[in-house]
Image (cartoon, rainbow over all chains, first blue to last red; front, top):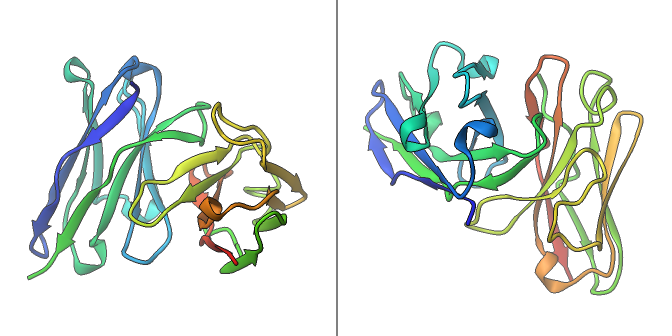
Amino acid sequence: QVQLVQSGAEVKKPGASVKVSCKASGYTFTSYDINWVRQATGQGLEWMGWMNPNSGNTGYAQKFQGRVTMTRNTSISTAYMELSSLRSEDTAVYYCARVYNAIDAFDIWGQGTMVTVSS
Amino acid sequence: QSALTQPASVSGSPGQSITISCTGTSSDVGGYNYVSWYQQHPGKAPKLMIYDVSNRPSGVSNRFSGSKSGNTASLTISGLQAEDEADYYCSSYTSSSIVVFGGGTKLTVL
């Protein structure tokens, strides 16, 4: 079936970087954009950016510009999100999601990856 | 880009209908027919319920419907059921070519 499977939980120290993976299966990876969304505990959803797996083109929310990098490896149908200069406020569950309507509707979501930033 | 405005909570009894509003600006909700709604149960990933203002993905109950008037989009759930109790988020495409979410609404089924 169509699914996105993310890498496991991470614990990082402030100032470090984290790279989360998102492996697609059940569909043609390069046919749908992948977006990343995060959610701090008890808080709402926060959009981080998008990536076109075919071209590698990306777009990031202004808040994360300079700290986030979204990449992909088409040979293994996997997208990556790397966030650098981590601070405690980055502690959250990070989700990858497939874009259904080529614009903004996220129809398939990964299970989420908990990233904890703590000294 | 500011988050879209949703009520923090709404409630209803089984069988009733409820509506959740999502207010933005002419640069997002009002400017595009790209509003989506998501349902999220505790500890789970969000689920797409409505896209392009009023379209339902395959498999989503027709008890869920979406609409838009001006800068405000709405999600209506009719025939409320216990399993509808969840958090609901709206989102919109914006003139900055980004996506913005609402703050979320907690639906309680009494």
